[in-house]
Image 1 (cartoon, helix red, strand yellow):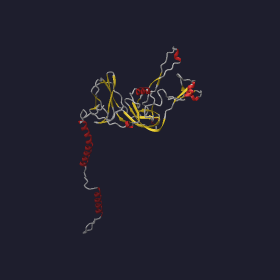
Image 2 (cartoon, rainbow, N blue to C red):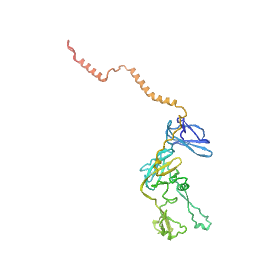
Image 3 (cartoon, rainbow, N blue to C red):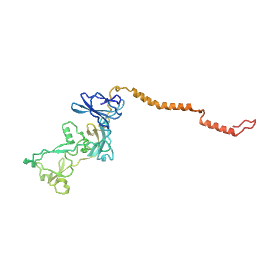
Image 4 (tube, one colour):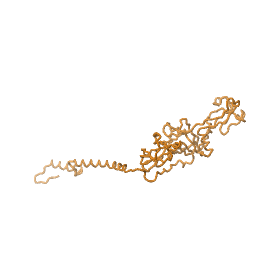
Length: 372
């Protein structure tokens, strides 16, 4: 919100009709206590650092605004974090390349990255791992029959999943998000998300499919041992009859085993634009590289800010003139205290000295002119 920082960094000018409470934070600092809302509040802002204000109105605290000013009317971009990095297993999680992202708009970080396969990735706002953003792992949920029902032993329902991928698919299926959008989480339990040469949010596996080892395949209607021996594969899995070898992994005593198909690899190294909003935590992966270009800074309010700069201007002029005045006074004092003032250059003084020494050593003869 351009104009939030006002009166030359000494106040905040709020515009949140209906708000009753507010709290304030500067980039890298901590929130204040909840304060009663007032249109203008005292706050000593730091030039170049984002000030964020959260308002509470009618049971909701969803309104958050921010502002950043460098000098008077010169603005800067607001952000929740001071910097942002994209860490992937391709750059060895920041060991080969730090993956620094650029702040291209308020709260929006961007970087162009090239891929020829699926890679795991996370956003990190610090050079270390004190904080990172990833996805919530899919959790399987099934409807079960009560144990007293005799059908419970053989009842098998298709699972439902929660987590980031389930949310993303729900939003895309209802045309609320595009295929390029998703959302991250800063929870400690967050896993890495997928990036790929497809420049989209489509993961290599469907929700719940992530184990590359052989697993037990529960037969559904129309499936049996012969089906398992002949099917080979479908869209998501490889199938094999269990030969009870160590190669079959965790298939156990099941007759039919399945294994998730590995992610696809491209012959072309493709560059994608990756955007991350560190306020809303939504991120975008797209092949439109123009979206990673810097946006123009939003203009501040028209006219001068409220308040006066007379005192600050006078102080600036004083500190500019003061060192020169002190130096000039020192020079004049030294000159007034000097006994001998130089009228000749050092070379002239040396020549006169040599002439005087020669004159004193040679006494001229009577009646003859002196030679110099």
